[in-house]
Image (tube, rainbow, N blue to C red; front, top):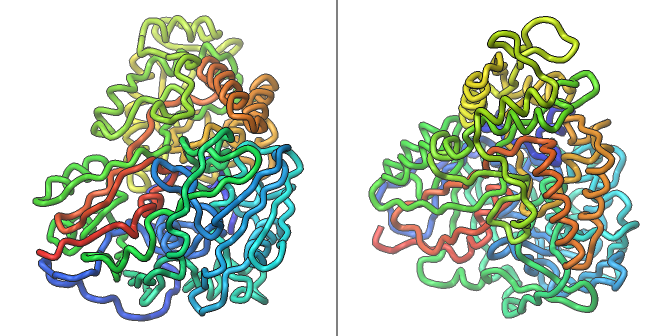
Length: 593
């Protein structure tokens, strides 16, 4: 992955609506759309963007992530409300000291070519992440972790330090060692495997080109014997595996801190035998949302995601359509450059003043068309981890906003703001992706700029192409920036705010270095006892919502619209849009067309 790719997929996973260039895929011609009233078991979904690297370790686009979610499995997976359930592993144990995690794997899982999925594949995958040549976003969380195969179907991990959410890392999709023999880590992203992978998931690739992927369901997939496993809920918080670790994190599941815990299987692949079950799943890739929306309205697509909030409303108005609204831990926010060469934002009163000037409720109802919630901290209010009593709220108040700016060292000369020891009017440049790159973020930036101008701040919207935006954000070449942070459902935001993450390829792009904040971040990350961790989270979020190292604006909902013949699609909490496939094995198509 290039440096820009790495930035795009950092712990904060800055979401840009990039369609990306289609990769060199097999030249199978795209299948023409079927008749609008087609009856059958083929489900057709529109995807905004194109595949680039269909590999869990090297994904570049949302199309890649969607395909990986359907083609690969991890030891564990997210189920209802993000709860951890079994996948390749059917039982796992955690040592009392929180350092060792042992997983017993299913013995009947198979790769597409018929080879068994084994502990050696797990160890191999972790080894790729720990290879010095791997520069993707997943590597950091696997450093200091020793993976050892205990026979063919058991694997254990030993961590240097207790990590409250290591189980969430076990959702990492596994790669087949035998299929990647001889492929170097440097060549992995653009390898033949990553163009058309060998998976072990509930679907297999039948056709693939730049315009579509036809996936066929694998009946039972050899996993039906484990479908009756029961989840065990107890003390251990499930996850520090936020987007920092490249996986969606759970807000609600909890697994035993010691002893044995087994997770439930999500809908069994054996359910595919039922009436109306999806046997073929076709993903059609689009370079623009308008064309995709039109095909949905014309009945050529059964489902569509990745639309703007306004387009979601248009799609939902299609006769027979319905909206499935996922609680998505995607936070729109303002990042202020707090490096030593940007003292203007160092005082927390200045940061609070800037946030108080923004009517975040109007932003949710306007830009997001009501599909979201106001954010007070980098943890959504609907999360089970949300420490309600500890959050310090920042109300919309233009007069107090100006008072706070003045208290933080800014001063007015006539109607203009000046900085301490600086001559001339202070001009705040607000970096944002341009409208063609990400219309939602661009619209948010326009509203933020208007809000700050209302209290007399001279603001220039600095709208740039996506690639330029990412490069400048990573290098610190900005004053303030509007970003969309995919945080996951776990409250661990240390990759985003920890001082050590400022340097190298770290994801602390604001450059903040706060020893008191560091201590709180590490305490929340290391606490493995449920009560201790909740207390640590409460202390962290109180500090974050008071000092505002980033300015939280709103959490978005992910709007997925399905046509009238699609049944049994259930909303849940997700950390990435690909999480919508958590129950895909239960989806049904009505037989009346």
